[in-house]
Length: 139
Image (cartoon, one colour):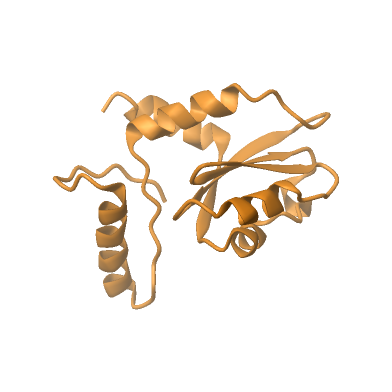
């Protein structure tokens, strides 16, 4: 899910570690938490909007939030992905996924992105990311 947290902690990594620890203790299994500041969501949406659609008949855009920034080699491997109707662009800690095939037919899944990049991630439709940026961006 998505939630807004108010904390005295200044580091998103420390906030993520604290939330992960709490969720993991409660759930009884490891939970990884990706943290973005409201301002970083606004900047991400602006950066994505500046990228013209690369695929013909592009149907949707998703963002995969990664726990850490992948190495340049792993980012290049993901960006070299070749499947009809699928494209990925690494943007720091995040990945823009552009799809012109139905989501249930996508081969560049979240699990595959995690394997290629070597870092955990979680995907959200750009519509959701945009709504979060609009709702929380001025905080």
